[in-house]
Length: 219
Ligand code: AMP
Image 1 (tube, protein in one colour):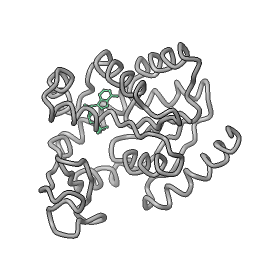
Image 2 (cartoon, rainbow, N blue to C red):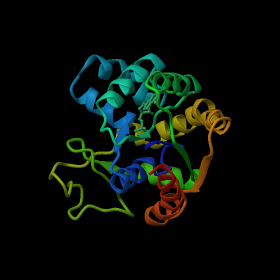
Image 3 (cartoon, rainbow, N blue to C red):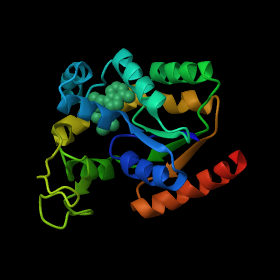
Image 4 (cartoon, rainbow, N blue to C red):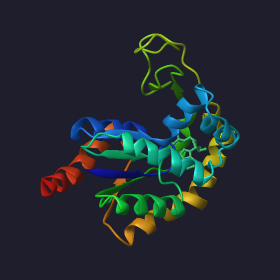
């Protein structure tokens, strides 16, 4: 299965993609996570991405498309769930063209919908592990020891782009450049709109209802 998860920053894409990956044994490919790993390793991709990410702007399409095409090539044969990619219509067109050349296509698109007040609270309260990428929240998903990652023991940090002033910019970028991708997909495929204001397990059960029926047809 090849799934795309759309939605503004803070709508829960990362959390929900992990749940989808586990249930359907597909690979979770997060463009944001890959970029952060590239930055930590100080690669060319990472260096090119840095200033865009820190200001809440989008990294240029050519960089992202090349990086995500390579990630998809390495992905498991069972498929993948894309998190944070595509983020522009141009990226979506390039993705379609790449899959078409391989005789493949996107099977399902889900759009997570959350209101802005919830989004800002979720993002500004988020704390991340710079070592293993685990994500926590200062109110809703606390680590066992304050400020310490449960999984690897590293000190948790607030991502520079999770600070309130950058979040506002990321949302502007989302509405201007990424929201139109929803209509791009709607022209070709059913897009499932999912209310993502609720708690993550409730959101997941609605999502699974759609995907279970769909994956049943696929088998
Ligand atoms: P995320 O973790 O998905 O919120 O992504 C963090 C940042 O990485 C974004 O604010 C962008 O600067 C950059 N980024 C991630 N995915 C993309 C993409 N598909 N296109 C352009 N920039 C991206």
